[in-house]
Length: 229
Image (cartoon, rainbow, N blue to C red; front, side, top):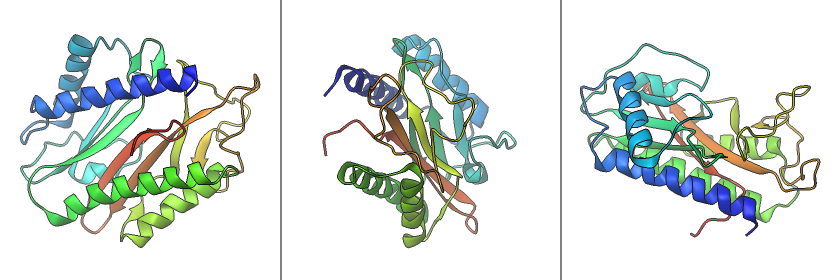
C-alpha cells in the first residue's frame, strides 16, 4: 500500500474510533436535538481525538430528516425512542481528510434494521465492482449502487454517491465542478491518475431512502483503499 493510502486509511481508522466512542458514550439518545448531538460529537472529537477542523459541515439527522440530501436543511428534530439516526463527519487528522458515515437505530423496528444492513451490503458490492473493474467510471458506479437500492426495495436518495478525498484541501476542478463526483453520466475514469501521475482516491457514499416510511440511511467510507474483509 502506498504512503497516501496509508495516511488516508489511518485517518479513516481514527474516524471509525470516533464513531465507536460516540456510541459507547451514549451520545445518540432519545430526547436529544440533532443540533445537540452534533455539538456533543464536536466536543468529543476535539477533546479526545484532537480534531480542530472538519472539512465539511457536521451532519446528524434523525427521523424524516434522514431523507434529506447533503445540501438540504430541515428543522432541528428531536430524536425519538424508536428513531433512525445517521451521522456524516469529515474530520481532518494531521492534514488528512476522513469522510465517514454510519446509521444507527434506536428500538427494534425491523425495516430500520434491514435498512442499516442493506447499506453495508451495497457499499461492499460497490467496492467489489471497483476492485474488479479497472475501467469503471464514476457514472457507472453511481448507476450500480442506485440499482442495488431498487433491488433491495429502497430508493437512492442523492444525486451523487461520492467524491475525491485526500490531503486537505483535496483536488477540485473549478471548470468542471461535477467531474470529481460519483454521479449518473459522469465519464470520469475512477482510476485515472492526477496531473502529477499519482493515484486519485475516492469516497463512496450510500444513501438509501423509503419515502413512504419517511426513513433514510447513510453509509460512507474509502472506496479506493483496500480494507480487510
